[in-house]
Length: 629
Image (cartoon, rainbow, N blue to C red; front, side, top):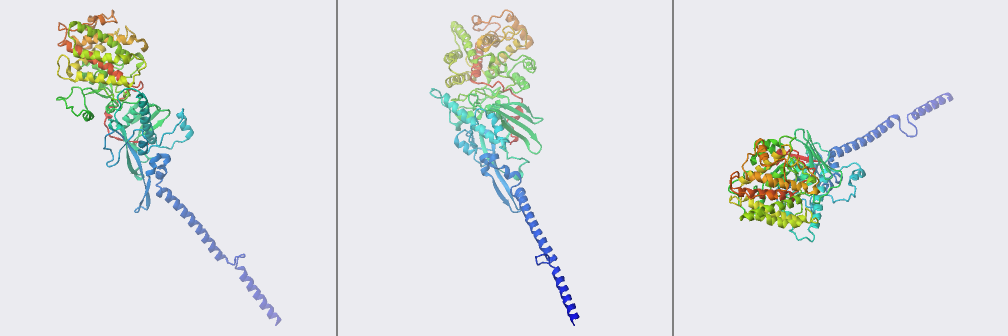
């Protein structure tokens, strides 16, 4: 009996020990339950991680549209970032990035039509309101060494078109302050309001979606190829490379570098770099709409009237006939040769300028003679600015001459000619006008305290130019008013005379009287004496302007080895006699008007010495879009 009880107790203990082995530790769970709990926990952690990863990818690649929202912030766009917003697209279950960027173009300040219909147009004038309207960051004083700014700031993340807007605003503000200083306590004409300007930089906002940005990392500004050239000229940036075949463009000047190139996905893209301080004082361009033509090698003649003049001169009507030569094309050697042939120069004279080794300068390039005689005056009433874009392929270098001294020397010779006409008892009306103008200008030209950009001097020069243009434009063709045909023929004879001298050895202008320093005054006397001795004779006498024949005729008329610099005493009044062309008196006064106009035009305008035209006339008026990043 006891034996049976002991066996029962042992079996019970074995069963209890077997049941205790099914639980793990103190968890009270068996292995299957514990494994299920652990797998559930791991799955929950994986769900959280995958959810976080999904949200992150959605946020970066969908919600913010990759780089779109990142680069549409204030660090990149400045105040333009305030217009950036997100729009939900239900069909695609994502956000679309909408931003605004500027479109820049050049137009008269009274223009109300822009490339974006219905959008407001803001004109850059340097005022606080203009800064706010165009969303331009306010200027920051970078100190006396702005070139170190890039080093202090490290990587520059700002879009370069923001820098362009800031530079354009600075141009208007700084030049306006300088202009007010020049007019302080000066009795001179005041400029018209900004809204009457015929040229200004305008800005319009364009709304874009980052979905359609052509592979840009930053938002871009838009403009056209012709407007980027005009804006660069206004900023004092001069082109050193213009390769339209390879689409490589580079311009430098006034502390800035403008670079352009072609990208297969984007098109032509420009970037602006500032490496030094920009200055906008007397080097500011004249705010005249015609400088747009100068930027591409074209110069309108004083016979040319564009539509903006009709707004100011409402009583002026169109001339019954179109001018023979409304425009001078000076942007390449081929265009210069074609222009000279349009004036009437022989083909030998025109082809002379095709030779790159030919001597084409006396004190300055001969083509500036044509520009001064026929070019339209671009100076705007009330402004002290004289700078123009150089429309020619030749450099304007003032080291060898002074235009004020040229006018004073011209006065001496013209006074003697006036006396000779007075002795003959018949003084032409244009000579009386020239003498009156010279007497009025002399006091300002002789005063060293009056600068070339003095408002009083420029006002008087503008009045003189207006008088000369009136005398030349009149087409009555009487004894005092030449027709356009006679004007062009006189210019033709003058150019042929100068080229005939420059193309021979020894040259009267360059070899017998070598150039000296500009402050000595001998260069001016040499040139003016040559003009009165030879150019005036060529305008009034019969001779063949062909170079091969002109050399012989000039050498017979003037002893090339016995030249006298002072030819004042030898000047004679032309009379109708053998050897003179028809109506010599009219041709003589026409020559005096044109030479005097050339000197006044060159005194009234100026060019930067580093500005040389790189041929690009085919781009004028082109509306091919380009980007600024």
